[in-house]
Amino acid sequence: MTTAPLVELENISKAFGGVQAVDNVSLTVSPGEVIGLLGHNGAGKSTLIRILSGAHTADSGRILVGGTEATITSPKDAKAIGIETIYQTLALADNLDAVSNLFLGRERRRFGIFNDRRTMVRETTEICAQINPRFTNLQTPVRNLSGGQRQTIAIARAVYFNARVLIMDEPTAALGPGETAMVKDLIQQLKSKGVGIILISHDIEDVFDLADRMVVMAGGRVVGRLNTHEATREQVLSLIIMGAETKPNPAAARP
Image (tube, rainbow, N blue to C red; front, side):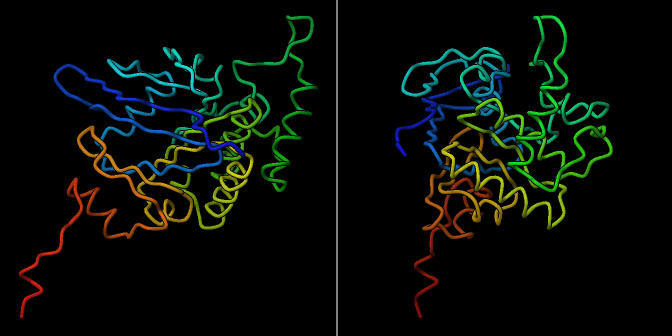
């Protein structure tokens, strides 16, 4: 598997009025790599991923996909180059079933006019079976499904449409232990297939379990970059809370 970055954000900045939401931030994601993006609310994480996913446009900086500069001005642009986003809300239509949600806005057609429901049901069944074989309620309205089943649909949609980079915003929030474990397994599956993942989470244990590297933001800036296997929880918490690592006090060590 190549280690060349799937996506590179270079010196991205974004302001809203007089508020600098993202300030000169750079980030790379390689194939099969999970990047944990951490920071308090207001740190700039959400604005950064919305720029990558096409919901916002950066004021300055550039985005490279596969080494080529990309223009991303809408979610459609992002999806077209393999960047999919699973927001905390999952962006699912509660009144529709898994099949309709998976193909929402990208329906399969017959003769260019009619929805090809039979094909969509078959392909939804196949992709969901790969991700979560226990999930078979494919034609049940989403409002009646569990959190883990809803996550399965959101992830299946990204995988079906060949996501190269997957942004996951709080993927285990509000899930029970069993469903959290299932989502973690899904992330490992995607990683093994070479998908690059940006994982946004307030749960440090989830990030330590899943991420290869961690990027911590505060005040719109990157305040720390850590390899997960070398980092401590104290370091990470210090970066999140203080915006810098806590340094030992030499005087405290003196007798």
